[in-house]
Amino acid sequence: MTSLPLFSANYGVGENILQRFKTWFRAYSRSFHGVNAELDYAADLKIAHTEKVQEIITRLAKSLGLEARLCRLAESCALFHDVGRFPQFKCYGTFSDNITENHALLSCKVLENHKILGSLDEINSATIYQSVKNHNLAELPEDSADEVTLFFTRLLRDADKIDVLRVVSEHYAENNGNGKGLIVLDLPDSETVSPEVLEAVKNKAVIRYEMLKTVNDFKLLQLSWIYDLNFHCSLEMLSDCGYCDVIIKTLPENENLSEIKENLSQCLSENILV
Picture 1 (cartoon, rainbow, N blue to C red):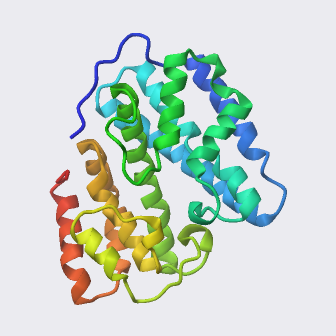
Picture 2 (picture 1 turned 180 degrees about the horizontal axis):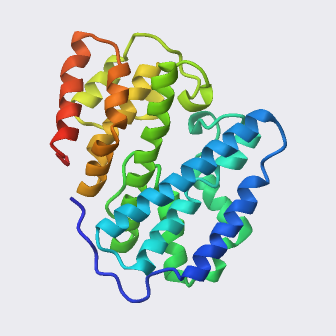
Picture 3 (picture 1 turned 30 degrees about the vertical axis):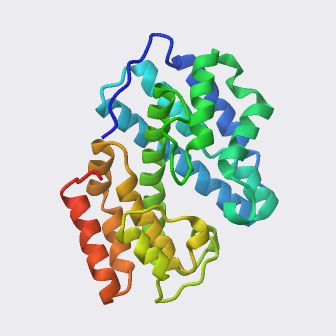
């Protein structure tokens, strides 16, 4: 489990600055409405996701005993983590980083171009910027940043994963993987699962997006995030939400998947943090 670093008095975001950030985000995200129905849908999806990640990261921060100023810093990371998704979809018509650009780096470009972090001192702006930049890495290098920035990055990664699992579980429950390629990245829906994906999830190894061939592969990648959470409170929250149980039920019944399903369910029910 990730331990709490020692936070100096320099870390934190004021309430007035957070409100300023939220005002900017509302204006920026809504500026993508009115072009076409697909962009409207995509923008609404990411606005709702951002709001949920803000709620989740604040709950996690409070459960870890963080002071209000640090909770607002965590919420600021969540607010900005996907701002690159808006220009990404407008330009490419998809959320697939593999065939477009890394959306985390796009988010950093948006922050730079709009100079939105300029109202913060260097230490807090750097924490937000680096957390946004690294939130979607397959693996987070231990030496990629200072201890405090690593902490907020891990917190953001957990909150982001929890809400993405909400989004996809609702989609799978209603459509069983069919429907909007926006959510399943245009992967084909079939009963098959790629052997390399099966092997990776069995070994609790990283599943990379380039390994995905089907929607079932994508489901296993998303379920494997159970093994990549950093805090017990994150795993407890995910277990209580039931999102993973929904996804597990949509996987095909076959011998190759039975052990995987059992291990994933056990990890959730017993709050086993790998």
